[in-house]
Amino acid sequence: MDTSVNDDAARSAARHEQDRVLDTSALRALAHPLRVRMYDILSQYGPQTSSSLAARLGESSGSMSYHLRALAKHDLIREIPDRGTVRERWWERPPGGVTLGPVEAAGTPAGRAAAQLVTHEVMRNRNQQLADFLTSGIHEEDETWRDTALVSTATTRMTPAQTALLRGRIMALIDDAVDTYRDQTGDDVRPVTIRADIFPLPDLGGDA
Image: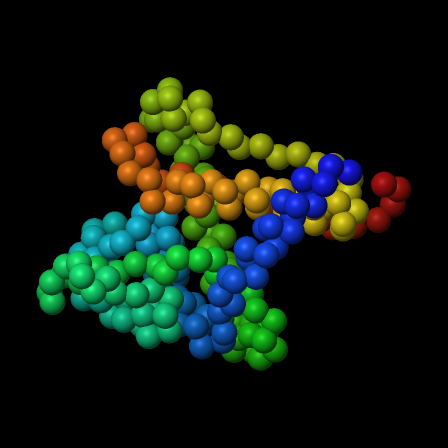
């Protein structure tokens, strides 16, 4: 086997060892549909104010301020001290990965409920973004952006070890793109979501 495959997997694993694992209190703070959407916007579009979030989500600025403070209390987001004014504060999501399903949280009913709600909302928002793109965005985008999109599903037969190596290779590619382009600016630059799903299909019985 190509040693670069193992190198990619090891590099990805080492990088994500530093990801923040949300404890039960942080998960419970995030476990609100509106807060998950706010967190997603800060992750995907960068720093926001309560007013800009309110405009994007159709909520009041006061409501946004309340939820922003609740997220900040658990260090899920942070204020940008040198930007904005007392009346118009800017908030950002700290850099680095986040793990939404810690083992310790799953040990309590409250932790499990919070983890399930957050995971459900993250996936619901993610699937809605994909559905919106497929139903309208793909027709509204200009050809340059439309030709860059990829929506693909494939099935193969693999062992757990082979699947882990594939995961590492994919994550290494994603990590490299994030590190290279995360702070890029320019006229033709916009947020691009990168999706990767790898999981075994359920055993339905019978002959394979």
